[in-house]
View 1: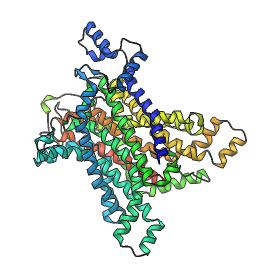
View 2: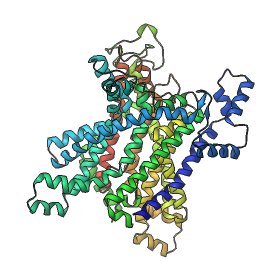
View 3: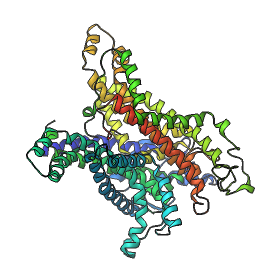
View 4: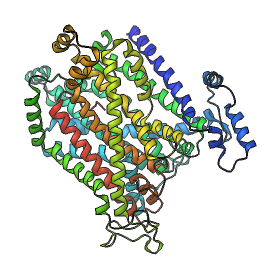
Length: 314
Length: 297
């Protein structure tokens, strides 16, 4: 097990390195002069020059890269001229909101997606199965930002039950906080719920056909025990592997959902930075989200090996 | 995610002509596939015949007709500039479908090339796949946003950005099936009679890796349609007044209290297109590639 973990960690390094390079090089893709783009259309030549020096663009490419990497090792992602502060600080402030939203969405996804898939598999080809699968298919087909807006129309405008946007901190009370995150996490989670329900159903169906399930039934185990202990536990293995994908989808979705609901999280920060061409923030955000994804996948790989010992000896 | 070879596809066998006919027959008997085909077909027809279907000028501002609710004159109502939403949605189909199609085409070419080389030329495999892994580590929309922000807002740049984002998925699927096919007897036979690597790749390996590729491409199409809408919604799509489903929703967002129809209809159009593509993809997977799982996305 120890060797396997070391192997996975070592394999993650080149990926992280390339991720870092790609994040850095995004600014090199800007046609023309990034300093001119960032300084804005009304900027004088002197202001452009100032921006250029502040971004370090007056130095050769390798020096820029070296400076950035050196800062990175100390947790410094550079400075945002537009925000007038360090990128790491700006991201650090916004990240907890995004993580809270992602976590809540994740809990909803698991709490609804997995049982729905299990029930659909157990009642295969009945109306229950068909209903669950239809809803899941529609769920993976709806654009989440549009769903978010529809939920606002229904729950905020028509029913006036939940706020249409804005973030309430936990210190202002649990319910207001929860209410401010409920619609965002629902609209963010529906896609993943559908995905998870579909995967759970298909893996459950596969497992339920196995010989050991027939044996468990034949020896007279109660149906619940067969499903919960024998079938579900084995179906969990493939389900666990998509957790990394789900997490990535949640981060991706947060950009647009935070914009729809005016939540001051990392996604919103990235969306506004992209709009204002704030390249240091874009670079930092790209790197951080990708690094989180690599980290989560590493965890999933280890968890996977823990659940399924066969993996370790491949 | 973990081991891509594990997701490898079964190798198609026997007489190719006969198989093609029966595959077509089986697809036509697959109810979900047919409904997907019909849905997507409707949207494609809408995109092609947009000029005939439109009832108004999609970009003409008519202040007198602002915020008209749906009626016989304006099927889907009008927006804050008095533009006809129905017409804009119809033209939006043209943009979305052509962007989706262009992304499919580019990812198919780039992904197949990378996947073939990676699966067949083992020396390059590790290098190419690490780059693909790195690209896949970025949350798709965030990378696409950053790329199109760097390149500048235009339909062409969206196509480039989305192709970069989705190529690794195609490359991995192709590579996985190449790894299986390259060990097949007919490939060994071709090597034995001295066929060149390029010829083996194109004539023998590629046709037999088609099934998972086609399935994956139908999902790439679906993602591309949603991603284009998201990018346009966030304001890095083709600049206004170009009618794009995402940007119509973005404009309607500020008026959802008084004019919900602006947001409602383009969203339904996106959902119908994506649902059609998902049904199509599910059907193709069931028929062409039964062992491929839903998690292969």
